[in-house]
Length: 263
Picture (cartoon, rainbow, N blue to C red):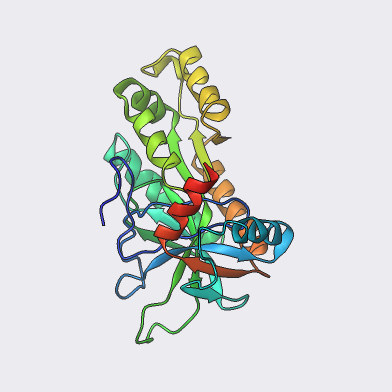
């Protein structure tokens, strides 16, 4: 089925709700990653348990117009692991700088023992998923659930360039329409600000507007290692947050209905 203009799409996927905030997530292309055979159907989750899961479920169940009695599947504690998904697209202005970032990123994440998967994402640079545990020899694909944080990473010079050519607003629109409730802009410093293609005050104002008006969380880092440290800490935080929770997966159509009711 078609999805509205500008809305990202996830092939062979179903999307659901988060336990902290009711949200629909559009389908974005998540291709086959390292060590994965076939394309696993990605889904989003309703979180059961934890500090906010019960409140969220009470809110969801009160929406009589939407049937949440039969999730497509559920992953219980111990049945899944949290994995960082990294976009494989060469989305930055310079292929050389992209290759350098990718190499340093994967090297440092490996040293930090962060479980990650490089795959095609049509929106965002990083997302986290809960992936069903199982053998690589399994006949059916291992199921995956999209969690509720998405990160767009911008080196400062690329951010300035994207503001000048209009990509900045288009990317924010796509992120806000992804349905993932927690949107993060990871802004990485680079070189001397006088060499940026945009006045420093205008650049800082755009970053501030993204936080205050667009409701993004802005994370500033000094360099690639700072970005890796943030992604490492976030992965460990999410692993701990979901360690005692059951994830219930719902199709995108259900989440779309919930989003309309919450609007």
